[in-house]
Amino acid sequence: MKLLQRLNIDKYLLMLIGAVVVASLLPVRGAYAEVFSLATKLAIALLFFLHGARLSPRTVLKGMTHWRLHLAVFASTFVLFPILGLLVGLLAPTLLPPALAMGILFLCVLPSTIQSSIAFTSIAGGNVPAAICSASASNILGMFITPLLVGLLLSAQAGGLSLEALGAILLQLLAPFLLGQALQRWIGGWMARHGKLLGLVDRGAILMVVYLAFSEAMVAGLWAQLSAAALVVMVVVDMALLAAVLAVTTWASRWLGFSREDEITIVFCGSKKSLSSGVPMANVLFSSQQVGSVILPLMLFHQIQLFVCAVLARRYAQMKKPPRQ
Image (cartoon, rainbow, N blue to C red; front, side):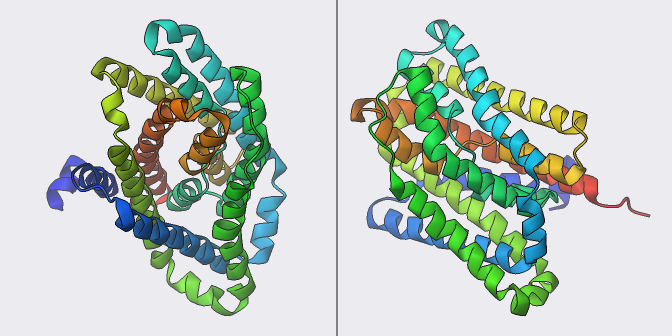
C-alpha cells in the first residue's frame, strides 16, 4: 500500500484492471453468466435505491429543473459526438474496415450511460440529482433519437423501436430510486451517517459491470475477428473520441459559468456511451451478420471510458479535499 502511494497509483484503477484480467482468464459463461448478470442488475438497483434514500425530494426537484445542465449534456451526447463520428468517417477508408467504421458512428449516436455516469459523478463530488435526471432522460430519449440518427447518418433500416430496454430502465433504475425517495423520510438520516456504504456500492457495481462486459466479449470471441493493426487503430480512435469530448465538455462547462459540481456532472454524463442500451439497439437496427462488428468499437469504448473516468473521478475528489495542515 505504501508503494502504491509513493507511485501515486490509483488503487481503484488497479481493481478495474484486475476485473478485466480475471474476466480474460476466467470469463463467466453459461448459467453462471445469467446468475452474475442478475446479481449485477440487483447491485445497480441497490445503488439507485441508496441514492434515492439519501437525497431529499427537494434536492431531486432542484436537479430536475436544471435545464441548462441537461441541455449541455444532450448537446454533447447527440450533437458533438455524432459530428466527431462523421469526421472519423471521412478518414475511415484509410483507417478501418467499413463495418468497424459503421460501429464507430453507431457508438457516437448512442445515449449516455446511467449507472457509471451517476457513480463517477458521486465519487467525484458532482451534482448527483442532476446526473440521475440527465442520464436517465438521455437513455429514454435515446430510444427514439438514436434510431433516427442511425437512419439519417447510416441509412439503416430501423425496424421499429424496442420497448424492452425502456421497460428495463424504468424497472431497474427508476423504480428503486422512487422507492428510496418514498422511504427517505425514515432512512435518510441513517444513510447520511453511513456515506461509505454508498461509495462501496458505487465502486462495486462498476466492477461488476466491467467484469460482465469483458466476459461477454471474451465468450463471444469478438477479439479473434480482428487483425492486431485494426484493433490498435480502433482503440486509438476510441481514445481520441473520448479525449476530445472530455476536453470540450470541461472547457464549455467553465466557459458557460457552471459550478464545479455541475461541471463534473456535464463531463461524466456527456462523455459516456451506453453499452447496455447499445447492444439491444444494434440487434434491432442491424442485421445479425453486422451486429458483432458494429458493437465491437462500443465494447472497447466502454472499457476505456470506465478506466479513464475512474482516474478522473478520483482526481476531482482529491481536488475537493482541503490541504493538510
